Image (cartoon, rainbow, N blue to C red):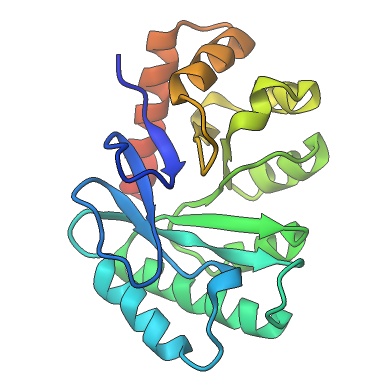
Length: 208
């Protein structure tokens, strides 16, 4: 059985969504293309946005990862402007948005009402309160390696509706099947059921 990796940075992983770096030629498999907050070039924002728009076609599945990060040097207003421009692109091309967020969850939530497509918080590893607030605003949560050892996060995932989450390796060096096995145990369902649910969720966000 193959397990879908919702967000990864490995070119040799064909079954999942590959995060394309700025300026990189997209892969032949599904990919996402976006401007990460740390990669914003304040002198070339229009060129970067044009790159996103031009590379999302064909196998492009989602806009991202994009979002807000309180730890990077780029001014918050610039981050918000670039995030909003990418949401507008997602609205136009009807693609979901994969979001990178560090300590800016309520700011990200404020953008949700402007988005016409699904929004997924990747690498989610926060507490139940933040998860509840995101879910209440119809976000999806994508969980990664931290689920394997973080008991609090395991409980958050257990409480997350089955039609609202994905699983990913991000840039961690481990096998996605290990995560699927752990989550099937947490959720009390078979690997087959978990696999089917993830693919159903994928179909839902793809079709708006």
